[in-house]
Length: 151
Image 1 (tube, rainbow, N blue to C red):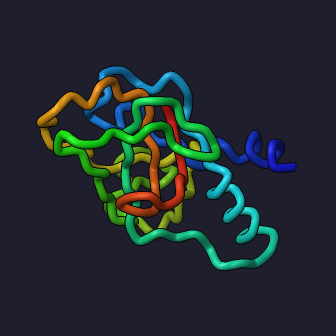
Image 2 (spheres, rainbow, N blue to C red):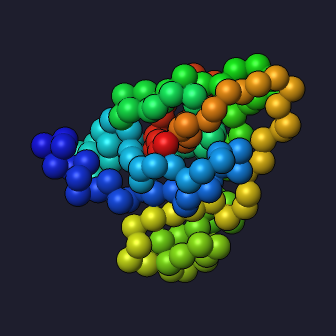
């Protein structure tokens, strides 16, 4: 059932290529939702439970491949820190297209995707971060739960 759900709803949350300006090349796969995220959607839609709605989403960079269970090996040191994006209409586009901010349309587009409305900028590394291969959207500034991943 979960695999069918994943295939059916995977396009729900895709993040625009080039989300992270540090990445040298676009992700080699489309973004996917984590098991944690899928479980919360199932609970909300089918079981009338409280919706998953983090006030802030944090962008984690990793040097190894993420899975639906966990993000890859997170970069550490060298001035690295996850970048925070407040959950809002201004910061995340509706499904109508990049840059949309209107609440009156309630993501009425047919793309099934969202993207960040502003560039996400990391500080200049003060040590080698090695090769960034993956990014994950998380619900905490450290640790926390993976929501979406691509790489």
